[in-house]
Length: 133
Image 1 (cartoon, rainbow, N blue to C red):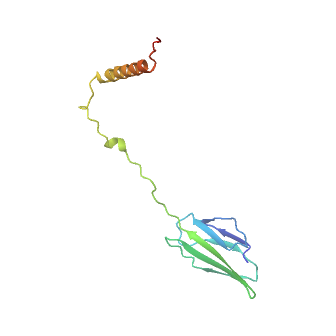
Image 2 (cartoon, one colour; image 1 turned 90 degrees about the vertical axis):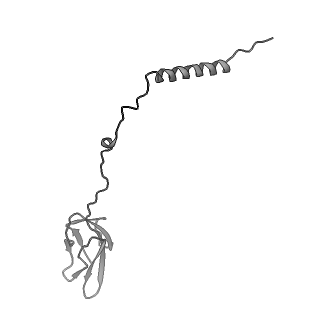
Image 3 (cartoon, one colour; image 1 turned 180 degrees about the vertical axis):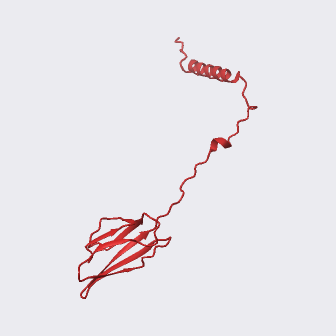
C-alpha cells in the first residue's frame, strides 16, 4: 500500500489517503508524463501504467504489490490547456454618429409643455369639485 503520494507537476484533488484509490489530477505544466514521488514498504514493488499524457483526459494506474496482496490507485489526469475564453472587442470604434440627424431645438421644450398640460388637464378632471344643490 502507498504510504505517501505526491504529484510534482500537478495538483491532487484531495489530500492523499492510502485507503482512497481514486484521485483527480490537474496538470500545472505542459509535461508529457506525471512526475510521481511516492513512499512504499520495503517488501512492496510498484508499477505505473499509462503514464503518457495526451491532450485528452488520461487515466494513470499505480499498482503496489507484494507476494500476498496488491492495491491499485487510479489517477484521472486533466492536462493543462490554455484556451482563450473571451475576446475583448472595441465596439466604440465601430459606432458611427451622423451629425445630420440632429433634432430641432424646439422639440425638447415642446415635449415638456405638452406633458405639463396633459398632467394639469387630468388633475382638473380627477379633482373637480362637485356643486351641491
